[in-house]
Length: 76
Image 1: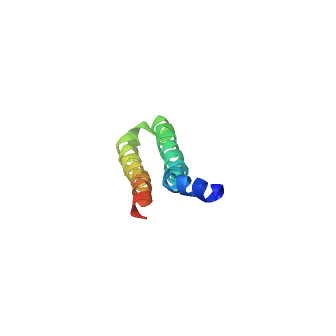
Image 2: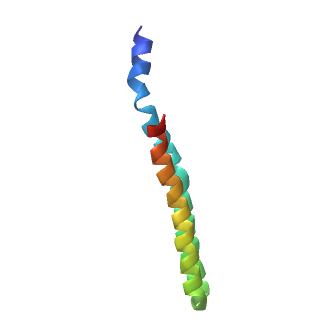
Image 3: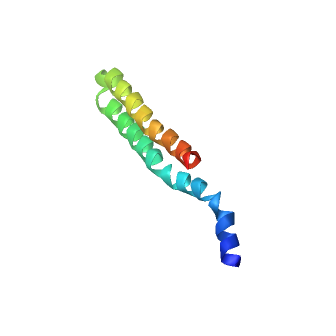
């Protein structure tokens, strides 16, 4: 009986744990985007505008994954 109560208590928090784990991927991706973007700008300063545009686009895609991840626990 105690196991059922424990599972019932955890049922509402599983989505939060899942989102926490899901947020790791976009966080790492955003770190790679900006880290490599800064290195690219340092190596080729004349391409800064193009690199910055691609960085912002990549950031938007990674952040969209994180936002989808925050919505999914509420769907079920």
